[in-house]
Length: 112
Image (cartoon, rainbow, N blue to C red; front, side, top):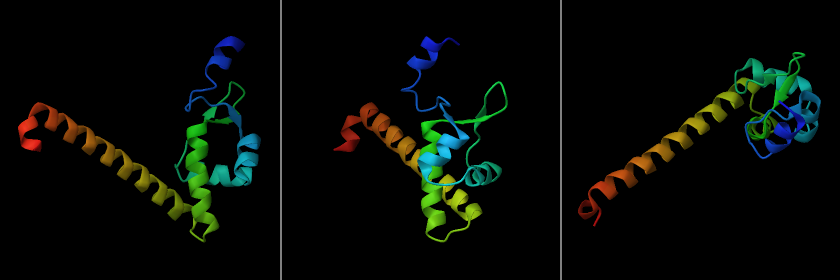
């Protein structure tokens, strides 16, 4: 991947653009927190060719939500589970809305 290719991917939420140190700084937390939520399998950072962890913006949003819960007194393990369940619920609601729209467009008289 060339520098031009990398620059073009900066708008990609899944592009692992942030080092562990930068990610921790952005979240206002420690690298240990990022390692802990990785061990709890909330996020799995990608690794650079040298083996260093790299985080995407999407992963940082998830980590920020976990940090909010931990700051409120929730254990890291429980916070990770809550975030996973919230994510699953959001996906199920999105799919349900898609199925509902598809059913309504297939049978427009039933929606009235």
